[in-house]
Image 1: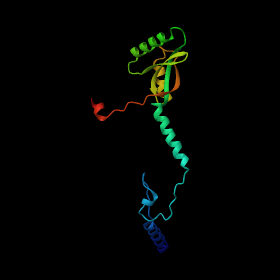
Image 2: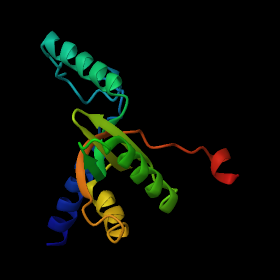
Image 3: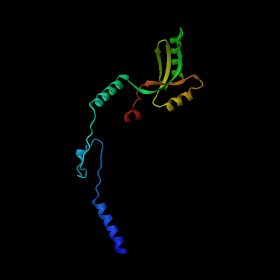
Image 4: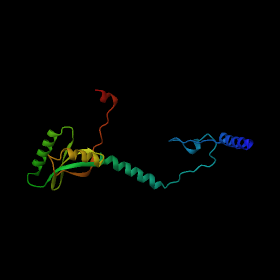
Length: 158
């Protein structure tokens, strides 16, 4: 019985010694693998139109000058004094919430005031709750937002 146990242990031990592991890191091609364990390579074959679509997508994103996100719309009107009212609402908002961004937009025939640059709807909901008393009719809209400002270590230490 003891010999059977030792025999099984010896076989398992030999199998684990002969096993080799292959690893992949980004940017490494299958032909770069020097371990010799991969005997077959799987080339990626794709239609050239995919590259064209990808280039178009990149170009469209560059023209947007922003990214998809959310803002709160706190005012819209198409009356005779809509422009002046929108400017007053924007000024008042920036006075009360100086850390937020506000934008006055004209899309015929409406003047709109939208605030914030939020990547997620939850971020917009947080500001909506914060301004609920001052702007009870504010609502979340999808919009092209400005890219978030990036801080370097030097800027954050100042």
